[in-house]
Length: 450
Ligand SMILES: [Zn+2]
Image (cartoon, rainbow, N blue to C red; front, side):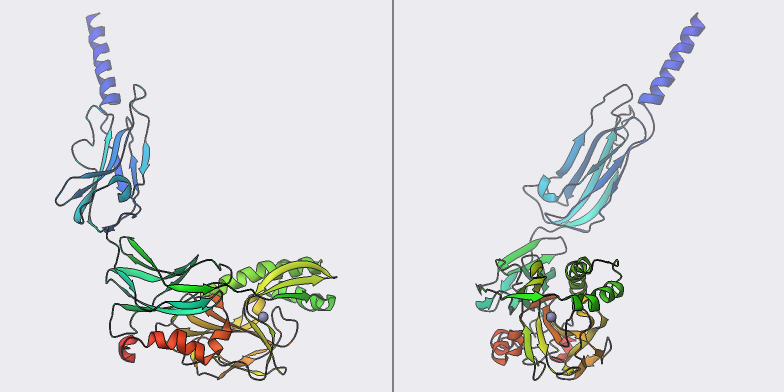
């Protein structure tokens, strides 16, 4: 009897030790290996415990001098004999969430995790630490150039001065971002940007933005009076002859599903292919030379009549009924069949080949985010990576892509955003809106700029 009692006691003690004093310490991992922390820096910590479950988890910021700040913490009470049953947890705080007052400078991130074990695993010291620098001050930012008057769908330039800690800066207009370019001026803190009021967001206004490594962001308005604009409404009849000639060919050339219904196939091209084409244009125009490669006004296809202007609101008619509406982002210029197409200005060929609705296309980078596009070419005369001079032929006019007859589709884009080319064809406009502004400050030598 006595032996049995002793045996039962031993079993009870061993059971207690195994379940309540388990030796599995909780683990914790900082999933965001940050070095510099700002107010909005996203942090993520994952906690795991194999035994009794998590009892307490926390992320603390301990400055070199000053009080520790709890950025986030969570308690998981015991729910059964076995513990909390919480074996995994995550915390995703930012400094802002936990701190009203914060000391800048060196600090340590401490990740704490305690489980329900009687051994109190995890209570003595943090499970993980990381040395960081706390920086909650956004970079300095100052717009240098005077107020400007611009038009919806039009372009402008700006010079701003930004703090040395800025890792990214530029002009934000609605959803579009036009990065500034460094190295143009002897004053290394100055940046130049060319930007647009996109025709599709006429209410958006330009703001200069500077962001540092910690994600601190300063934003100030760029003084601009924006003139509203009404774009032309145009109707475009679609004929059976055109559908027969273009739809099967374009569906096939662009890897789209064939269609017996030519109108349905046409809509797939005019809607879906138009969207994917513009996405590619945006991607092609992401990287631009940090120097101004162009000079003066852009060259226009000579002796050519404009068939369509920038941002025409097109209504497509089939059998007299509207079947689609799209915005035409460029100029259609018609000259003699197969006319040589001159480069609008000096630049570098960043694309030469078939490009969706534009057919055979050449895109030139003119630097500081400025690009020109030549579409529907019958022949391409340049190859990617080469430089062209102003007026040098890049190909011949044609009707490849979504074109009903021989013409040139000409677009000017800033970082992939189509703008009205009329401004860039006008030497007075370029002088007032671009050259005078960019020449306000002493330019760095070509060598320093490269
Ligand atoms: Zn066009």
